[in-house]
Amino acid sequence: MSAGAPDKVIPIEATRPSIPVLPIPQSGSVRRVDGHWRDTLDRPLRDLRISVTDHCNFRCRYCMPKESFSKKHRFLAMTELLTFEEIFRISRLAVANGIEKLRLTGGEPLLRKGIEKLIADLRTLKTPDGRPIDIAMTTNASLLVRKAQALRDAGLDRITVSLDAIDEGIFQGFNDVGFPAAKVLEAIDFAVEMGFPVKVNTVVKRSVNEQEVLRICERFRGTGVIPRFIEYMDVGTANGWRMTDVVPSREILNMIAARWPVEPINAHYPGETATRWRYKDGAGEFGLISSVTRAFCRDCSRARLSMEGRLYLCLFATVGYDIRTMLRGGCTDQELEEAFGRIWTVRGDRYSELRSLGIAPTRDKIEMSYIGG
Ligand code: SF4
Image (cartoon, rainbow, N blue to C red; front, top):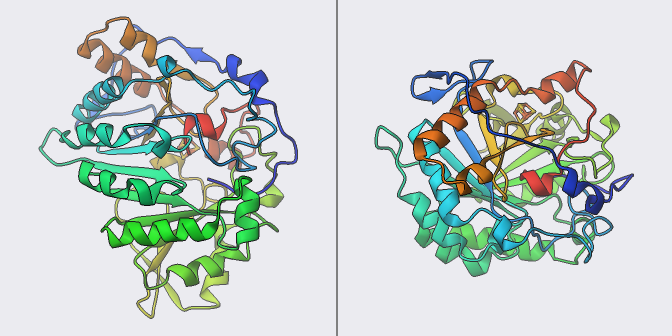
C-alpha cells in the first residue's frame, strides 16, 4: 500500500512472536445506536477488513522487504489461520450488528486457496433490513487474470489494485521480484472488461514516484478505473517513515490540475476516506487520501481482522484482541457478538489525529503485511 525503500529494516523474524495480544473482555457494557455498535467517539462500526493470508508473492521494499521476509521467515501454519468457516461466522455476526462492507486483504488474498468459496459464502449475507453487503478485495493483481472469472461468479463486488508506478524500472524495483507493471495493467483491463468496478491505490513517496502521478492519471483517464493517490504513511516499523517523504494531497492535486481542469465531487457516503475529483472534460475521476495531512479518524468506522483471528481497531494498532481462542474454545454466537460489541464500545483509537497533533505514541506498530492495508 505504500512506496519506497526503507532506511532501516527491522528483522520481522525477531518481532513476530512478540506481537501483543489482549484477552477478550468478559464484562462491560455494549453501546449500540441505530443498529451499529458505537465507540467512545460515537463512531459506528460499519466496515470489516479481513486479512486471509500472511503470504505475498511480492517483496515490496516498504511492506515485506526481502531482508526481513527471507526464506527463514516463519509464516503462519494453516492451523493458525482462521478457517473459512470461522471467518464466515465472525462476518455473519458482524453483519447482523451493522457491518455493511467486507474487504478481503492479505498479504495477497488471491494466494489463499479457494478464496472464491469464502466470497460465495459471504455473498449470502444480508444486512438486518435485507440489503446485500458490499464485498471488496485489495490485491496486487498478479493472479487476477487467472482468478477474475471465479471471483465474479462468487459475487465479489469490487476490486482495488495496489499500483505505485507504471514505469517498469520503478515498479519492479518496488516489488523486488521482477513482476512487470504491464501484467498488472493487463489484469486491470481484464477485470474492467469483466464488469468489475476497479480502483487503483497509489501511495506517493517524495523523490520516489511523484512523477508517476500524471502517468497513472493519463493511463486511466477514460477507462472508468479510479486512481486514488495516498499520502505515504508510517504503517508498521519496517519502512523507516519520515515526514519529509510525504507528498501532501494538495500538492498532488495541484500537479493534476495544472495538466487537466478538475473539480471536486461529493463523497459517496459520510466518512469516505478519499476526497473525489473529476476531470472537467468528462474523462473520469480520481481520489486523494490525505492520511497524514488531514486525518480522518473522526469518521473511521473500520476494524481489521488478522489472518490468525486477532481483531485490531486501527491500522496503527499495537495490540489486537484474540478472537480465535474464543472461537476455538466453543463460545456461543451470543458470547461472540457481545465480545465484539464490548471491544468496539471501548475503542478510542485515533492515531493519525494524534500524529498531526504531534502526540502519537511511538511504540512499535504492527506491520502492514500482517494487519492488512
Ligand atoms: S489512524 Fe486509525 S483511527 Fe485514524 S483513520 Fe486510520 S485506522 Fe482509523
